[in-house]
Length: 284
Length: 268
Image (cartoon, rainbow over all chains, first blue to last red; front, side, top):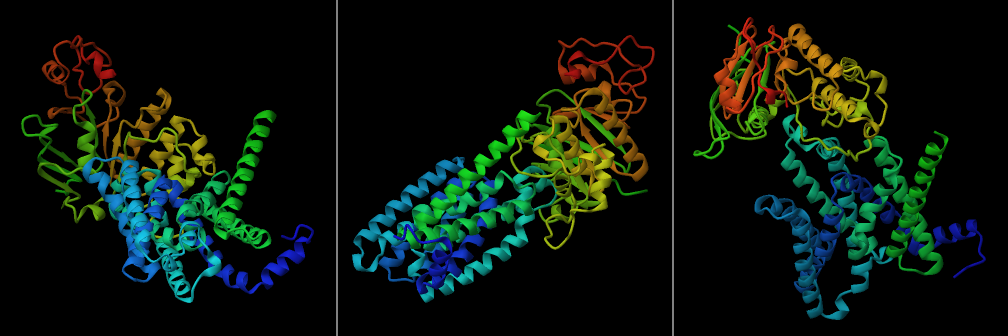
């Protein structure tokens, strides 16, 4: 810990650290991608889905460990499948979406715990899986991460307006000729992909924070899809950089610190907005 | 002879022993303004949803603009339709300006590389509903009536050939209602747009529409302008307990000189 160090030295030292220099680009990339998707997560009320998919991905990671498959690709396929199942099951069987999420979340998590408990403990970094550790990212993981970070923004750019339109009024979107069901499936699949992208930084338990908090901070100030997206990305970048600096200075776990920084930003954003509303009402 | 905008033949929907819509046939020419009236649960909204391609009928045939409405043709055909339903979110959450809401109605809105936000069409649509001065206002801060007008602008912005409206005047005061019906009449006359509008209040719409279809599971009567709707039609639709009262004799459904006629509960 360096309680007396000044801010400039601290940032310089942070940037000079080889571990942080390596971790920063993928962390910032994850921040941008998750912030973009978080806008749609908020707009479509998919917060619980992200919690469900991120926890369910433990089963994918467990399968990968048990069958000696590559960790992230296996978890990705599993998470996308779970997300698509969640999109399809409630409609077909009359089960509410949150109940469907709860069922798959609990079942997959239980399966994941069983699979991981039977694996050789030396093969599994359980703490890293649960709470994330961007500082230990491998070159293979990095390639996978760059691939997904390229794919998700492209698909987001192509579908953003249609998703926004569906979130605003799905009936009219359907009646205006948009393929609403296919677009919903794409959204759920992409949420699954983004969750896995985020697991390396924030872990299974904290991923939902990265997928919800940036847009939640921006929601108070955005007035359009673009401004909401831009603010969400800025909040996410600010939270990630602040969190990583704190993590470096106090030697805290990186994922938890980033999510805590985003929580702090949310409280500040909410307080400022509340103050602004109060001041407007008081003047009025 | 021009191709009808809508041609519905022998359309049925719902269980065979208790259909929601039974053997509906209807034809609409360009520029025609059709009002549909009927009691609650008569199948009015269902009929609109079927024409809008949201619900598939059990039997029957629908042609829109001369082309059969199918799963495969619907995306193309629906680009020429404006639709205003009644299942609105009464507490909208998305942060949006009114012009963004209207932009969503543009046929190419979902195409990401199209710049739509400053479109003249948006300004024009907002002007039609007297909301051009509120283009940058937050949609969430509007009153129910203003939101409804913004939604109407969203339905109009694509300059549809067919406009489907499900109780569009529900959130509007009587002045705005009258303005809305006048606007729709003008659009039908000036642009050849056709309108199918579900309304409860026949008295409010009758001087604006070209015809009124009386619907309760089936079309009991389709009255053209100046045509009387017989008492037995009202009774077949609303039941024997209704009390039929006279009002403006010029409107559809009221034959001049008769001491009557529009059922009380049709004004619900």
